[in-house]
Picture (spheres, one colour):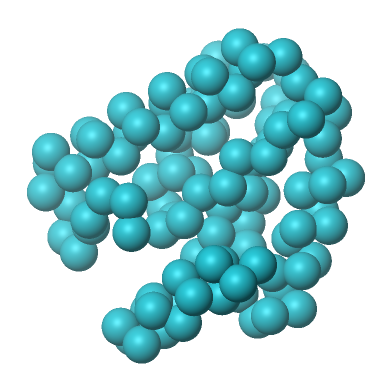
Length: 110
């Protein structure tokens, strides 16, 4: 939590509120909501990725959500490692695409 607060303070000092996307599988949703509540109590902007039963649609939604936030938290525990690997792969690809496209004000990894 201290690291998240540090990141948020740096973002606010730069004139932009920190936005966090919490992504998790439905199996671990309870823990994601707990973290979201803790961040919200610290007045940080929190969004949750909307998981669907269609895996292709879920990845498309995830990719779009990653483009719209500065900070990504992938929470997992009871989900298969392959799910986590795919999420990380998509997040890195999306970040790299944004960096290569020269997205205004965008820098990789904080």
